[in-house]
Length: 290
Image (cartoon, rainbow, N blue to C red; front, side, top):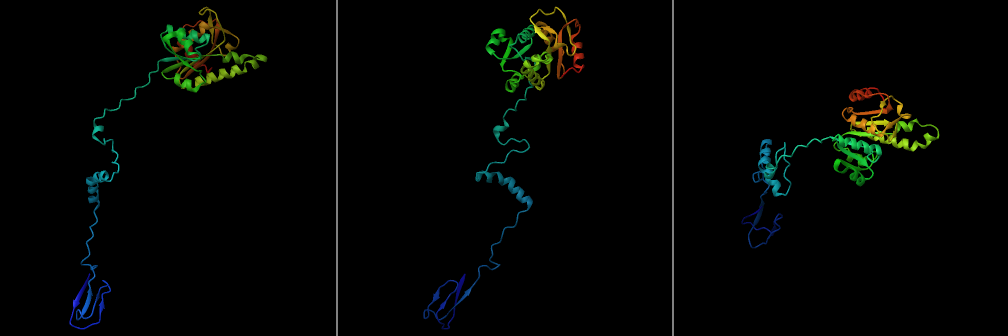
């Protein structure tokens, strides 16, 4: 601030450096200027005292949410499971996930003669049946609502994934033992079929669901329950087995499922089975699972 002090002495024109204002001679006898600095320590505006941690915390608690709304910033997310608004307080709790019920039997080759006999035997047993087939309409026409037909084969990962929902055990009639037994030109002709049979069994084993793979001998369209059986390793390469007997064995295996899986060979023979549970237990412990 520039202050002018006047006295009676004659002085030449005087110009104030700070304000740029010139005092002309004759109008006043004398003029002297005195600059009073406004930056004096006494005139300084006092700076606010820094807030303590407790004061800043209190300010945040009381003013933080309001300030966020004023400036359009999003509200804080709820912490420790607390609800963020009134509507959430009245929201019904989410229902717990219901464990999947696994009570179905999956037949991997529902189109084949043996597969159809297995399905018929399972219907008589009143089992819940799912079957992989090539023609859904034909399977539905043959068995109606007694089965759930699914298009695909066991090597198709997409169809298998869908088919395995609710399945407790898989039944597979394998031809691998017969195809491995051939030699010479017959082995060459069976090579493609053998690779397919191997792929079928590998897919069943890797499914993660308990399974029964019956490596039957040469399947014959003969009445079942006419002869006994032979379960020795390597027997399926040269023996025969009634299709009806093969289906009956698959159904018996359902009552004694292995923890992970069971693979065995079987043909018609002289052995009479008195206790199927004991038989399957001994087969599971025999090591014939390759």
